[in-house]
View 1: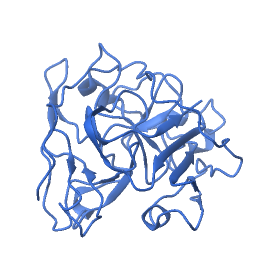
View 2 (view 1 turned 60 degrees about the vertical axis):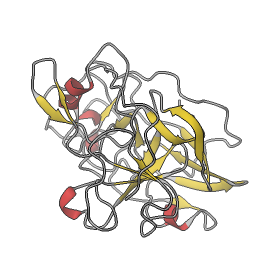
View 3 (view 1 turned 120 degrees about the vertical axis):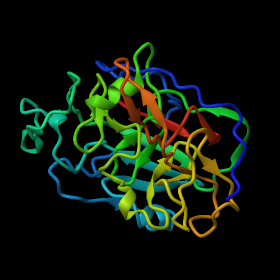
View 4 (view 1 turned 135 degrees about the vertical axis):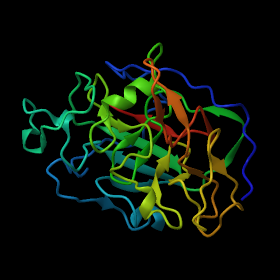
Length: 278
């Protein structure tokens, strides 16, 4: 597979074990208002609300979202509430029914809160002519409606240390309650089930994100900017697209080696759309 040459090496920033707070993302106002018809999957009941004119690859794979077209753009709205039990729902919240008692190794003090995330991306995305920083905060949405962050968060903390705060499904909330994934979380991906490319989400530039393998069942990226050209794997998609990395090991502050199978690195392939969250 021929990949697009990386513009710059990935530079891992460090992120907070305590707060995992969100820096500013592209927050140009959406042309729509977050609606009451956005599914709430926190009870474990999986629902979705996607218009019939939205591209089929979104219709056929995404749940727990509201999606529709606005001109040539796809608008995806989500509450980013995981559709499974999580330590971070917490017994004291309104999602007590979804609380489980299995804490992550080193839990952060945050609790999941319902969000009003509106992400607008081009339905026919294009590769940017110059490097595009992914930035901190929301960089995409997973197929189950949970938002995605890149391989970093706010300095001066360590992303490797933060992996210990993930719940049993691979996610955790920010200080503001935004539940999210940094990597190929177990809630959406297992390597053993990835025989010929598994769709994991959509990035903020509109390109799809796949698991660690291509359509031939071959592992794709060990590190670096993890996208491939449009003609690189047309059995998956004719778009450029991302793959979760493999064998990307980081070192915690205590010297332990941990794997971060990130979905989006420091840079993105295309021009970013817009995202708002409150």
